[in-house]
Image (cartoon, rainbow, N blue to C red; front, side, top):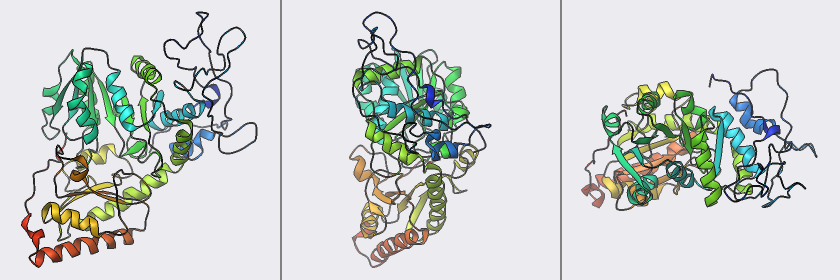
Length: 446
């Protein structure tokens, strides 16, 4: 990235965000700033994002000189003699020093003013929506993470949230779905999971702000390494930090990063404290560990994904490759403009022979692991419609690939042997040849 960001001021951490009923009983404000927790390096120039991530914003432990900061696991904290919390902490359900540290690093990487960590990506996403002022109308794409889409369809209405879905392949789809004066938030996901369509973030931000709405971007797949939505006009960035931000398949976490510390941040922070959606201290420490290698992981995975996509684009057993890094992808031009340094480590392939052929191919892979999730160091393959169930909009012949850190030759060889075996079965007239139709899938620009 060419942009430079200032390192977070971790030695003057923000005051504790106390939920209603947990402030000082004297009626005075509880606390001002927390004590020095880390010793950031004094630099004469702004640090690059890679440096902030690799050194966890220069954090360590003042008491011991350790280069890794301690984990703060306390759930409750002592008041001052005059009944205040000058050190900035009251109770673990609303705040934690280790969590604050990771939030500061994420805010710096995304170029935002504030960040919140959650116990899962779904907790972060649903909090962003539940924290909206009512009445609230939400606009969301039909091509998005199926779990959140299902929540919007089944649960959002009972919380007073009205949702309109738009077809991102229609140039007028987003504009037609917005209700000026009523729409509170526009949600986009780019690239979208699992067909990897692309939405123009700058254009979506203009439409949102013209209508008086906020723009939230699910940036789980590109991460701040490849795309920084806040610099393109978005108001909120949401991550399933379980995926690339952690990167080691051992933490479930979510994050929201805000362009401004304003009303939207305050409402979300209060809701997290009241409902107890904060990430645990140990999980936050593991997430910080993962962030320190984020840039090298994502760039390596993106380069490998592009090589695999190019290889499979002419494979006889593959009907279609869905990857925005391919010039033939309808969203390639927009992706090239707003994704810097790569197109992500995710791609999908539609296997000739339909659902049975796709499942058979996945079952024959040995280097690729058959598991859900994405963004880890190990490469994963998943027959996505089986995971999503009967209401899935995912084509039944689609395999989703999450590229890890293995050698590219091993990954391609494993794909070739599995797909080749399936193609041989189809050629021999087995039952795999009975399902060769391709369901339509839209990957045009949003």
